[in-house]
Image (cartoon, rainbow, N blue to C red; front, top):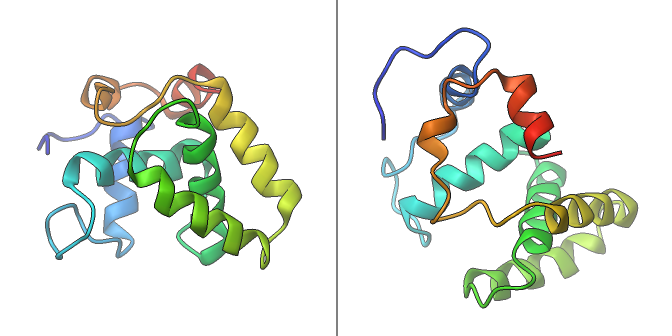
Length: 130
């Protein structure tokens, strides 16, 4: 994980603030998911402006599912089940918006060079992947 002082108003600053809010940094706690998945997932929260509530997690999972619907990424099996169950509890309209948003962008996971975007202004980052 890159250790630098983030540029004010940047993706890196938003990520620093995200972890400072009490979200565990990757590798701090045991996880079923590899660090290579966790950091992009956390950046998806920032991209979407989604909090870590159940509704925010469902929004991010729907986005990720839409983004990776063309791949055979094994994690998607778990996410598809979570989205189905989440759809029973949360707004299916919001989940479909997030899925459609994900389907419009390239997969932003392991092959994504997210570290190269940490100094990008947050608004530019969100526009780039709108």
